[in-house]
Length: 267
Image (tube, rainbow, N blue to C red; front, side, top):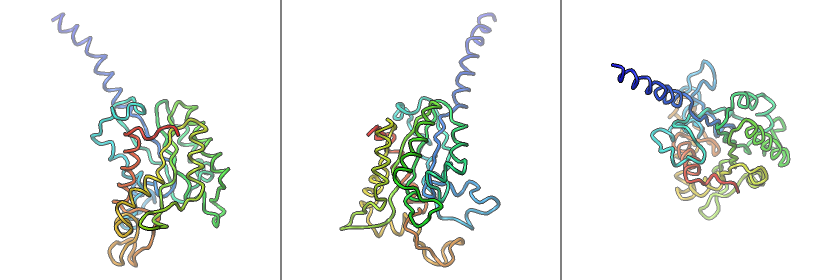
């Protein structure tokens, strides 16, 4: 009986150690714009996503699926726990500046703990010269990225800078080309300057989409919809920026693949 009690006594710390580990996953925060956002998670309070938004899907909306059953040992340079929780804070229409000014970054910063990861993908709205409420020039864009990186490091988190995902134009001789001007190279420069991890999602998505072909990605990846098929778009839709579920999953796979292959390296 005494022997049994000793065994139980020795096992109790192990039990609580495992329990604690499972309840303290690495949180991956996603900050960015509409191409990253989660529209299904009460994006518009009180409204039915499937009636008002579907099939629009941000790649962050489906990113958690990448970690289901994944071998996290392939990500051991980033993740030290046995589980991952994706916390998608991206929001439509936001540039680096407006994401900061509206307090969205503050709420992420306040919750950050050591070992958490911040994936930051901006550029679509920063580059919107004709929309002064969101536009940020190249130097401003770099400065806000530096801020996000520095404050992530301050909390013991791991910053990963992403270039903006591609749009479905322009196509040249069967290959999708860069539409984001100097913003992708600016993101790379910030990552190099600060020592942050870096994923060139713009290039990865241009190459992957080019392999699928213009017709396929236009109809299956982007929000180009026929009339009468979806409740939210009775007249159809022509949108070469935002994703249908298949496109969102393709982009999420590119990001996860870059992380898993240690492609998220410092440039």
